[in-house]
Image 1 (cartoon, rainbow over the protein chains, first blue to last red):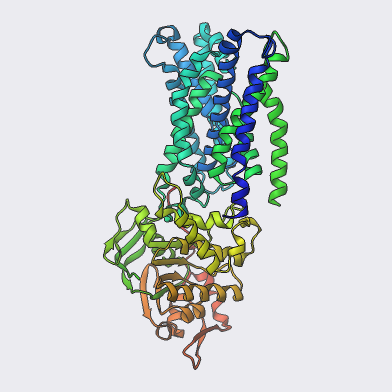
Image 2: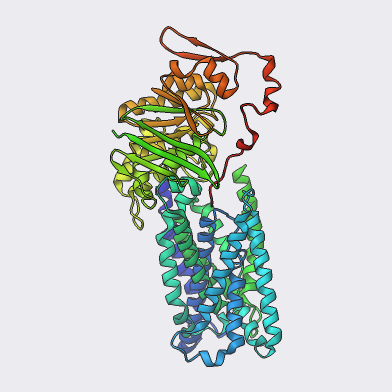
Length: 326
Length: 282
């Protein structure tokens, strides 16, 4: 085994330790006091589901971000820039507008499904538009296409909301995220989607490494590129839509965590994908803590916290990558 | 040891046919080199055999004819090195060569100890043992070219397709790369099909040359038969002198010729519409 492979082995156990620490901190810290003083009921019914949900959301968004980056061979994309989040938001808005009250007793909640369909349609449009300009090899076209799709989805969403002003409040509290009100029910709602999505994505980590040499060479190496790309996009979009439907729109995490992982442990997707899950979960659990205690008794939305730490960090990451490259 | 047979191979991009029905067979351990002017269809022949563009006719390795859906099987038999391979800067040499094992690994499987052994042996054989940990972005052109050949060898395919393997290299590295391919061909019994622009090098290394013009084979055989001033004048629009060394080497040397100056613009031999390389669908 090479030195690099031996060094790389340490990152997964180490990141699991970091995640365990983050989970412990998340459960111990809260407005109702630390571990000893808060009652068990508060810890079990309010803090635990919230910490677990933050972990699921953070791990899933990071994993989806890394997978999109691999399958589009573009380090600039994440679920937000590709329009997935906006498409999912539009799908969810339609469910709210048609009537959320009647659907809650259904066997399968249509909200995550609608979000999934909206997200999938958005990413397919982004991809088709972004790759129809074949002269662009920088990948910027794909991001611009994502911006356009996001604008379109947001515009349609605004139109629907104006005609259904009674659901505006509900939709906006959904969009801004509701880790706040998380209970075990939300964990149960997203977990099946996230497990399937994460399982499929992690099983494709070797294929993402093959795609790094480009479509033609990957095909000449025996990979059916179109099928791999479609499978990964569907799985990543399903996971993203599911978590977005409970957490709302949380930006930056799908770009910063995978980039951070690449700096630590190299660019092979065999390492980037599992480490993104673990460190993404740890990151969001930690990012949620200040949101709960900073303005107690009020909440600071988690999207604000991730952007506050994420944006400067992202700039640092970009600068470091440029230095490494040159 | 395997033989590659092409039976009426055709390639079309839209309505434009770039390879007319091509029938040839490259026998066990032979090296056939396709030569011809820009846009003659040389690369398209290789891409069709590698399964990257749809083609008519049949491609057969030994007695196995490829269908449209057995990409993995095809990759286990045919290794393809494109003219300008993508080498991701942040990939290590070992990871890159390991990609060659792809056709031997199941869809959900990961590489085994055997796959890693194959990679290690190939790296050692090509004097690349120290490059397993190095990032591709930090390597020189010659080192990168050797890693690309290493990846193709790790594929353990009996047929090796090389599209302009030396176009980006200086004369020393060109010679080293071709000697390496020739040595491996003899050691491993590889059957090689390549394209090359340098006619002297093509004649020096290949057993047989086939000259393509507008998708048709117009001359084929040993270098001494194909590389004649008349043939090169009529298909390349080139003015050359051809020298035969005592050891059988055929040397093609360009000559100054004033009447070629206007020919580039009259479109007599190089057709500008065929200079652009057609892209496959993404």
